[in-house]
Image 1 (spheres, rainbow, N blue to C red):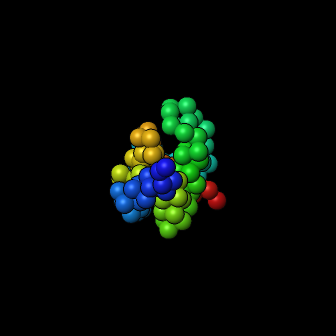
Image 2 (image 1 turned 90 degrees about the horizontal axis):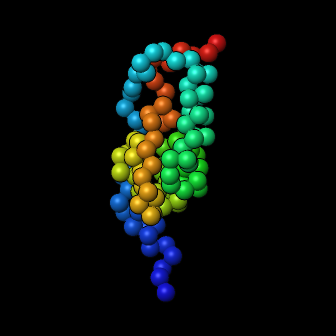
Length: 114
C-alpha cells in the first residue's frame, strides 16, 4: 500500500520557489480590457491542449494570487514548477503546462483604463 502524499512531497522538493516574472513588453500597447480578454481566452482554451482541468484551474488560481498563496496552491496541487516564474510546470503524471507571460503579469506598456 503506497503513501498517498509521497508524490506531492517529491513535487515540493523539486519545485522552485516562485518569483515574479521578469518585466516584459507586448508588441503593441494593451489596455487593461484587452489584456483581460487575452487572459480569459487563454484560460478558456488551455484545457483543450492537454493536461487535467483541475491542474489548469489550480494554475489559474495561482497566477491570479500573490506569490505566497500561489506557492501554497502549486504545492497543494502537486504541480512541479520548473521555471520559477511559472511559465513551465508539470503535473504528477508528467503532463506539461506552459503559461504565457500575459497571464502571469502585466506588460510594461499597459495602458491603464481611466
